[in-house]
Image 1 (cartoon, rainbow, N blue to C red):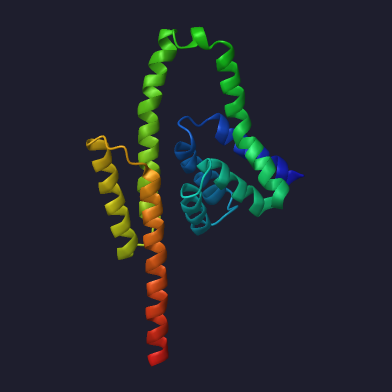
Image 2: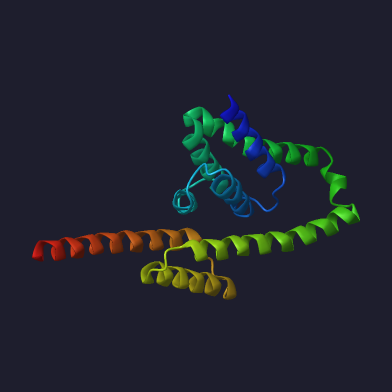
Length: 192
């Protein structure tokens, strides 16, 4: 029971004090679950983040469910997910009760402008940290640079191209690279 309550309150804290959605929560999840509590390893976190990003559904829910599962199985994933979702649900519910007047309050409108900037900085810091922890191999760096360049071009020229195609192309390219590398390594092993 101690593990479940620990999961619940840890993820409720992350859910309650994070603005900006899943990408902003990633750094807090990493800090709490990898660095502070050692619930999962950094490699596991990087892998689940990559998988969560390239599969349908909310990124942070999949990372949270994985961490909860590693600690307490299926019930752990359910409890962790409830913990991360409940504060946001409660906040949105309360805002909708008073939404008409909520954004008319000058202080709140200005606060949201500041929050937008902070969220951008948080997301950028997560990207930099993930890059620093990424294995420094040529292929992933090439994929990252090409993806970044294409994303910038899509935004600059206001092209109506979904980033899903970019994710699928990168995943397919990585898979083909994996197959080719394994075949080449097998041939080298056969020669020896």
